Image 1 (tube, one colour):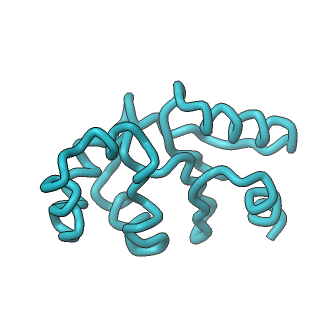
Image 2 (cartoon, helix red, strand yellow):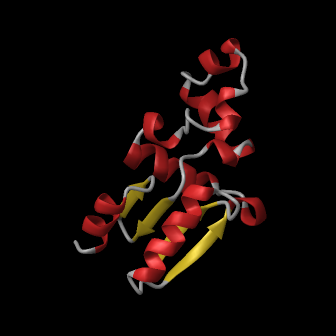
Length: 116
């Protein structure tokens, strides 16, 4: 079963939900606003995807940070703590199916990922 991580009010998430529905793909939704994110799951995302992918620098949460805070996120421990507290700064969506993980919404990439 695929798990999709994110927040429901995000336009990118809505596109992903619509895409999965149109592909008749069943999934479980992990809502960061209701369930946050476990340290184990965040560690897995950072390990498999890398910090540059997991941290959503295009989102308003990141853009509103001052330069010193942005610089501090180059430290892995600071980044981990920040993402635990500010899940809205995690790239959306992140899809997990067993050992396979995909970050972000790109219709072609998602289609290829689903058909592996």
